[in-house]
Amino acid sequence: MFVICIQIDKNSFFPKKMSNKLKILNDPIYGFIQIPNSLVFDVIEDPYFQRLRRIAQMGLSSLVYPGAIHTRFHHALGCVYLMQKAVRVLRFKQVEISEEEENALYIAILLHDVGHGPFSHALEHSIVNGVSHEEISLRFMNKLNEKFEGKLTLAIQIFEGKYYRKFLCQLISSQLDIDRLDYLRRDSFYTGVTEGNISSDRLIVMMDVANDELVIEQKGIYSVEKFLIARRLMYWQVYLHKTGLVAENMLVNVLKRAKELTEKGENLFASSALYYFLYNQIDQNNFTDETLVMFSKLDDYDILLSVKEWTNHKDKVLSTLSKMIIDRKLLHVEIQNENFSEIKIATKKKKFHKKMQLNETEIDYFVFTQEIKNQAYQSENPIFIVSKKGKLKDIAKASDQLNLQALTKPVIKNIFCYPK
Image (tube, rainbow, N blue to C red):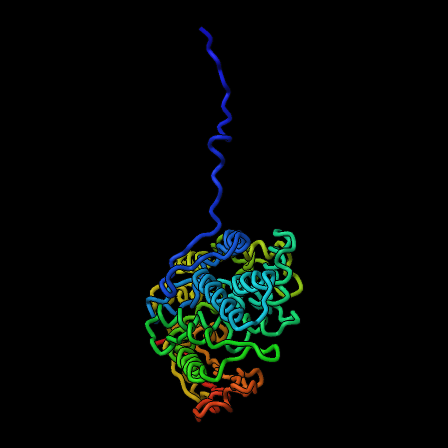
């Protein structure tokens, strides 16, 4: 009797499990979103992008609209979905877009917000000086381009507006870009402010290209009108809501105070990422690769954890502001078109200077004014309507809505914040 022994290679029968890179995600706004290719999937999987799961899309707006807790991760994926639709529409209308340009559009729109810091713009105005989130996004994109061996080069050119085909750049950044088409609809959904619920599908279907300009067909003019009016309403009802503004300013002041204390040698509780920015002076000149790595580890959780801990700090300014944010006992805020009088500001400062037993410098953290500005439509960078004869016309002139002309003028208001 012979026994034959055969050595079996497990890998030949049971090959290693391959990662499924053509994922389908379920989005509450659009339904199923398909990841278009493996490169986009790999960029999404990168820690630089995964960080956006921990960055709120609307900062502290959830203190006003409790449902507004969606993230920049949600927004970026929604933008990729809309960009896929825009590419299909333009190709159907005989606009030539190569496969390389298509992939570059997906990468550029996916990463357009990757440089945002915790709570949107609060970090830009407190512990990182003079470095915008657009600049940081570009730094992240260049680093990712190194990781992916140059596959993001065209995406970066489009993101910077340096690509020779202007309409591709306009899909990423213009007054009617894919970014705005997603965030207005998404923010409207999560806040419950229905005035911002635009028809992004209709606007994309009406897109075309003429003279290398991204344009809207004439029959889409009313959709553009609604888009501009919705954007104006969302700014004044949501993005520039006075309670949201005072909360963001208070967070800025918390971080400024923390920075001031660290400069005096005070030892503050902070995560390693936040510690780096509190104890180092970071600006345009010394934003190094090390800084970028530390920034990639910084998110909303670092800030919230520290603010919670700072409620018990011995410094009265830091602990009081921190406790007010955590408990949502915010400063009182007035809003008006005109500047607030110096007498009124001085009176409030004098009152709370004595009541809160703070010195003249410290009271500025609690009593302050801010100018807010919004321009719903910028005529110097127009949205073009194309007629059936191929003639381009600025929407502000093509529309029979008289109030569109008014939207070209900046609206300036002033807020005045002080303790209740």
